[in-house]
Length: 336
Image (cartoon, one colour):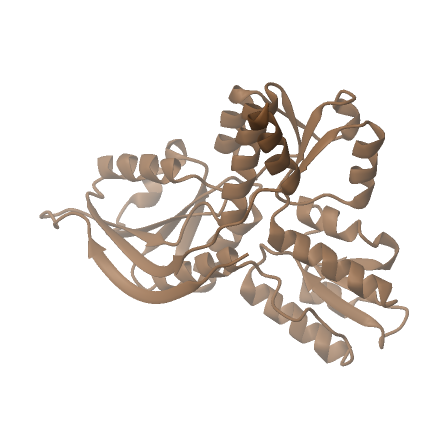
């Protein structure tokens, strides 16, 4: 895994200002991260390699458009392993799964392809390490989110999930000297910092990971939105309602004092919300494809936002390799 983020701040005119035109500022980075690109590619390549259908445990990423497109191509999304026929091809989603799901898949003799984001896998390995050290694991995140379900499943008897400072204040642990914390990768940087600070205040001997668990793409998109708040009056975030990182982008904007709304696609644009807005910001969560941003931009032009500018803040160059089980299967079929 290699990646870097070069921080530069440039403002590029895409279209000359028209008299009376309103301005749409589109911030980068936005949209697909490396983990989402990898996960979507895995499903598409699995369909190409093994044929239809390919089963996917949970939504491959949290975006309705992406899921619908893959479903049309032959992917079948399931929530339980029992829904998958014995011996079929099964892809684990980018959010990761608990060990019990892997065991169930093995019992059904499924051909498993793991699309778990490598950064989520890193958190799973950290959870195992802390659990083997005999520590109680404080997992910071949203307890119903698929990523938290997967990570907490590594050591359920030793894991406690907290999602706020208030929950930390109510926390009771077996041994305050044997604690560790980890975080969901798609959280708000601000909320996480507050929770970690409170954990360290209550439990001075708690330890954490060697590096921040908040994924680079989540952090970059939040920093980009924070910069965007200094340019615009309102921000639209393209993303699905069940996308954690998309919802966090809305919160980052609101925390900075700028109104923000989450929209699924161009059809969700509320004309009344745009009244008296002269400068509008636009971004997208890490699981939202660029085609949705383009469609939203086109529709906003109909509302007078015809002066388009791009705010380029952080350049991303991240690539994750395919899982070995898929790479091997493709090589084998090519050889035949």
